[in-house]
Image (cartoon, rainbow over all chains, first blue to last red; front, top):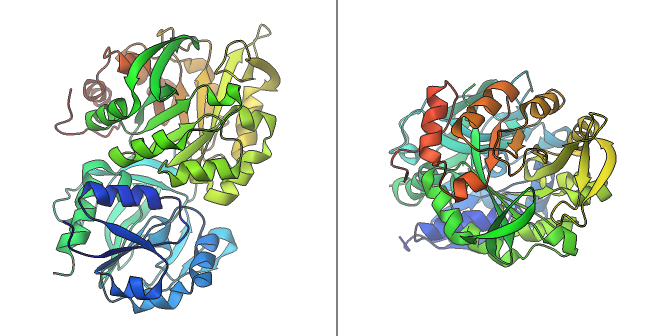
Length: 203
Length: 263
């Protein structure tokens, strides 16, 4: 699977290493880059990210990548914070304008008795739509989540998970996808999703 | 709840080898870290915690080389602990591929470290490990430098005050190691864990005392912890993770069962 050129957008997130290794385990090579030409020339673009929304957007702006990400025509996958940044806005850090690539807002997960925040651990995927990114994924399979903010289910939700409320686990708008959980740390399910992103989507 | 309770093997590491002692003493060699980490991931462990047990007492930072080796091979999350005293040290470990860092002794020296880490990486990356022991007056209090029994010090801070304090500073998870039950395999300290649960808003992981499958059922059911950590019973093969998860599921607890996981 060394075919497609995968650009891993250097957004300063700390999961860049683990995403790179997960792709390596699939036999794919990703190039970590913040270069516009590199990103636009790639067959697949991944926006990883662990951290806070304001710092993530600041990094993308400083690197001049906001426009670039709007110009990407290849399949794009945002992971965790990378998915949240695809939306219009995030409530994190007092409110942050995000990339606006997928309509909708990201809000704080309200804590409740038995609903601890951060939402941390293996949760079930439900409400699966027929989507190439989710080929071979069965309802109830578990993925590893770790986040305090989330996108409510909406028109672009193709898989949900429940933690207090129902949240978007996977979203899609055209050739833009986002996974709230960490495929790079979600065992066989995560490998399946990354493989789908590399070979199934955009066919 | 749909979120699964986590089973977390803990690998105490010294010089790149996994070791295990009893009540923090007399460490025995348990094998190579990458071998054990791979085995646990395949068996359906939900997460790993890797403690560099000598980093803190020796005043040195974690060796990121083994962090990178583990990160390359496993496809489940792992947390690194031991000797992380600064944002820079944490960044090195996270960039090497760890998903979370856990601070224990350095947080007792300088609690602001917890908020610095949370500001830099988000609360979801920041775990605070708490070593706790009941004193003669019946109060649980925290300990520091527990990696070396000769250096271990008791602090005047009650555990039930320390946990909410570190959560307020930005801990996204707390691992409570009940030193009185550690290594003796007679069960988790459910009384202490339930007391801490009541004051801990973030995920809470039980540590210390696992000896039999029913200890896990008990700590999830009676202390409502989010995860249970153990070392010896997994390293020795006394408890197999797939069988443990079947037991937990049969007891009505939500777990991530891994079809085809090696028994």
